[in-house]
Length: 586
Image 1: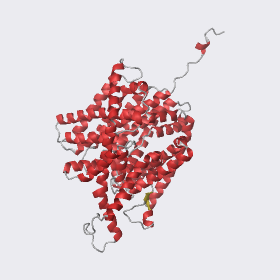
Image 2: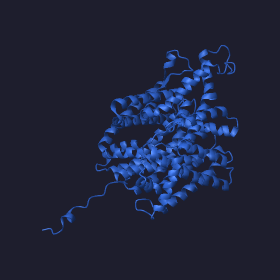
Image 3: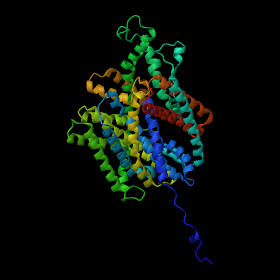
Image 4: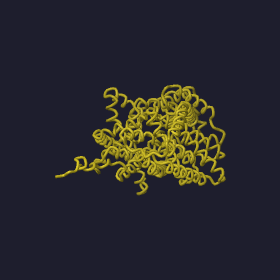
């Protein structure tokens, strides 16, 4: 007879699987794939996309196959690492392409060190605010709530993984057909004999359609920017006779009318649409910063409250010593990046610019985290633009140093918002904050060399290059705008009248209750209209489906399918470049 109490006779339940090797490896792999794909889409559209939901969807499928007894908090570690690794794509692609476009001589090592420093610092500065923002103030962090809802429904996640795979296959097949045929767009306007100054051209790009489908009605401001530039300003300027004459373009009288119109359109873009778009983006970014001032007040209040309520190290968080070591390491990396980036600046000047970059990243990161927690909208462009401009003047007009240090600011700001959104998701499903913090701090840096490597790959002749007019169709709008600003500051002959008019437009759009409106309109104004119009198709499809099927159906069906379209085209394009490099094929 067993005299032991029944409670002692029972087997001790195994702890839930959480920070496991398979979750870490899967997070790094998924994050790296998303990173490469979103570098591509950011070069194409000028903005990137969050990766937490995509990582969670893929994680359900893979973990179910690899580990029969996987848990939702194990998948949460996977999506935490994956979103952190992916996050570097936006920070790098918004800034570094400007140096490629300027033809600057810079060390990739300095860019990688700077971005890694931003990664560490962005995570470290936000961790002490977790309890205050999430548990005490209960900020919403809508993206984190959406991921938590998905993690709580593993059955739905498995179905969504199939939809993502379907989108991937469709985009891959169409992109391969486009590559082999050499057909990249469908010129409907040309078929209907509509003048070239009123373009109606659809790009053969399921990535653009997928991005539009994800945005739905929220993507209409982006579409409006393209319509303003190409369907209003372009015909107006043409009708007023403001286009340069054939003689001023160096063309003889025998040049075909179609060729004249094509070159006049290019001149219109360079002389008017591009600077107007850059000015609108700047104005929109500044409007976003002004709108974020209440968030700054809230962030400083949160920081003060966190300091008052802190009672030493908590078992739920990484301890202060580990955070301190990471912060000091980040500053040293930032200092090393400044030294490598410039051979002209003294060590004291490099130290000063590293300190200023360090402080600005902390301030901007707090603002972005607070804004993301309240609205899920991040004033990333404005904060990064201010940071790069500040570095430019502190470095004595050294564009390389300004952009290299700007990479750290942009990456770090993004990590602040991403870490807190992931911690919100973890809080809602009962995950360990310490495990999430350790995972993101330990592995997010992997995304930096991936993003920089993909940029170099796509810059090669086999990659088609990027920038306005690139054969690859990757116009790198954020990098092009940054290049235009810095070149204008350096030369002193920037088209200030166009910049000012555009800035007024961007600032004026800030009065509308649509966050980021000016930035989206400005980006679309100097994108090829074929990209914007294709994106519009996706937005219209999503709006129609949401009306007929409802928002819940959109989230469970269209989001994974559209993500598959984006990842499919992006990874197929990158694979095609690798094949061309390996085989020497044209």
